[in-house]
Image (cartoon, rainbow, N blue to C red; front, top):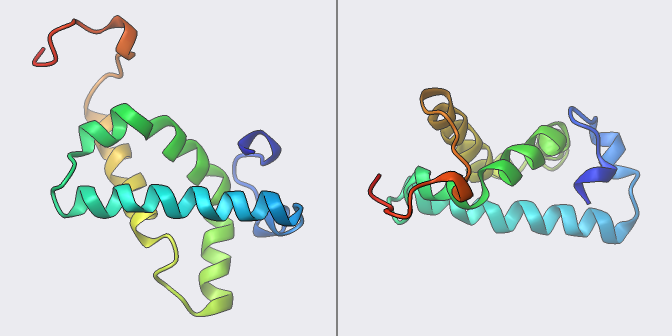
Length: 112
C-alpha cells in the first residue's frame, strides 16, 4: 500500500487511488491513531510504540500528511488523525535523542 504513494504526496494522489486502497489507508491511520492516544495517556510508552511500529508510523505520515490535512479542511473535522500526528511528533523527538538499534542487534536483556 505505502509503495503506491510517494513521500510528500499531495492529497490528490491518495484521492485518486482506487476505493479499496483509500479504505486501507484510512483504516491504517485509524488503527495507529489508537497507539498515539495510548502513549498520551501513559498506557504505552513512546519507546514501545517506536520499537513496535515507529518506522511504519513515520513512513505512513510522510505519505499521508497532506491528505490528512486536506481532509481536515474539507470536512471541518480537525480531530481526524490528530493522535496519529501527535504520535509522529513524539517518535521523531524520541529518535532525535537516541541512536536506533535494530532489535536483532540488541542485547537479550531488555533493561540494557
